[in-house]
Image (cartoon, rainbow, N blue to C red; front, side, top):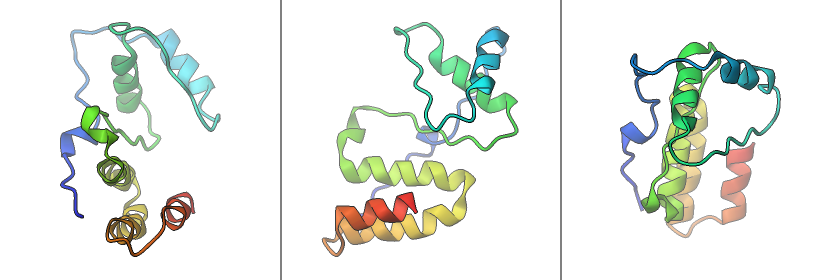
Length: 120
């Protein structure tokens, strides 16, 4: 099963010039950068996406972007886009991971093997 990757889902949106940068929040993100996971939680409309777009456009670090939607509940679609998002910054990751996803979708591999390929 081969999923077409929607490129607009895996590249950061353009930074809008009509919105102000929130330097204090950007500084907080930079302070947390060495953590393995950062969870950003706020109600709709509070600027989460803009903050991350601002960060993505102002950092020299590689940023992998993936905008989720309800269709991404499909496991293969999710992983196809997840792999493509990471491969945008790390192309070698995409080669082995895409092959592992193909094997999984053709019932030639296990979910455990696929996850091990991604993690390693």
